Image 1 (cartoon, rainbow over the protein chains, first blue to last red):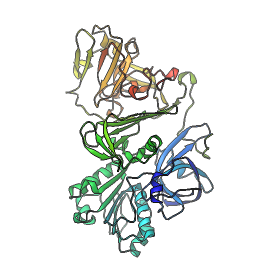
Image 2 (image 1 turned 60 degrees about the vertical axis):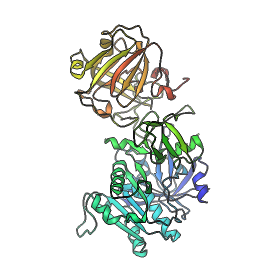
Image 3 (image 1 turned 45 degrees about the horizontal axis):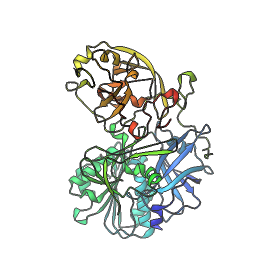
Image 4 (image 1 turned 120 degrees about the horizontal axis):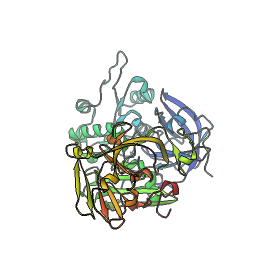
Length: 250
Length: 87
Length: 201
């Protein structure tokens, strides 16, 4: 089934919105039922296509947030201020609507639960979405690899999946979540309070003797900074897989 | 708009490459015809805010691929890629 | 027919006076930034503009010399092949006609070349006759690097990919030599009023 997910036929399908979950003030998850969904791998994405009545079309890619074990396809979308597609998906779309999508797509930025190496996940903002699919997959599959997630957000209200991450890490000693809030912190905050830097990486990342599997996702500048820091700390660039979200006006 | 906002990576064109090559391309390793460095297609630099997709080598910024689609056709220039290795 | 997404409208698309909007285009109010690569940065002290190729003698201007050429401010509509048009844009620059007057050539074609390796080809007639400029100001301000500064070619009667950003020179040629996009699917000439977007249009 894993192989089928990577090579599945890429045709446009209609998914029906079963539920819209508001995750943060700007972020919502669309829970989709997609008939004949072939299954997917953690880290893959879908392309979503919207068509207006006059025929105008816009297309964007969104990472799948749900684990492969979940029969639903969950897309977590951040509404961008002057975006064209995201304000529609987060704001207009409601349960019962249909969304045209194709996928699953991707093969490079993918983690499988059978992978035994220590896993390091580094997320900037909405870059946490494909990494959350990996975390959920790890939990659902009972994977043995130890996982550390370093997640950078602007403020506590911007942290997506906050409660679920807390519950998962409390219940599984193999998952450790470190948060950094770069713009504002609530009183009593005991996580990091600054942009990712060498010291933070040294404290959170696996020792290099582990040859960990690393996935970094977020805006291009964040990904480049984070990967650079990891390589400077002694990580082999070959261990690190990245996915850059541009500000394409989504 | 920051310059980095315009640059993404090969993951962003995984769907487009599937349309053309009918297989998942992001794990393929491309050798740059300009500088010889090797990168997974998922890792190369991609500029999409353009009349087509421009794929560049992360090491030397040379053009690896250009992809244009229009009127039901695709044009793809791979002359900047010396070879693609699939495992 | 494609599935229609309930309630989706997309960015506001003005259908302005259609006589000013070529077929298949829609009008935008912002100024989209398109880029095929990293933004080149060249200090003005190192910037030069050249005319080379099939001519009696190549000419090169430094930035200071270029600024001494007669320049003008024009208001034009611009049309990008990615389907957006922007009306009444104001540019200041040196007319390419002024530059071509300084050389002797029998060449029929030109290739504009830019920092970063971009090229675009045009018949020389599309550069003559007050149709093209080397623009260094947009809307009264020095041209931003993301829009092609310090200077770009501006040829508003053709699709905007012909208006090469970060232009550094024009090579005059006897043969039409397809540029960066023209060699990979885009039309050799690119007249938006005849919707010449791709090969064969």
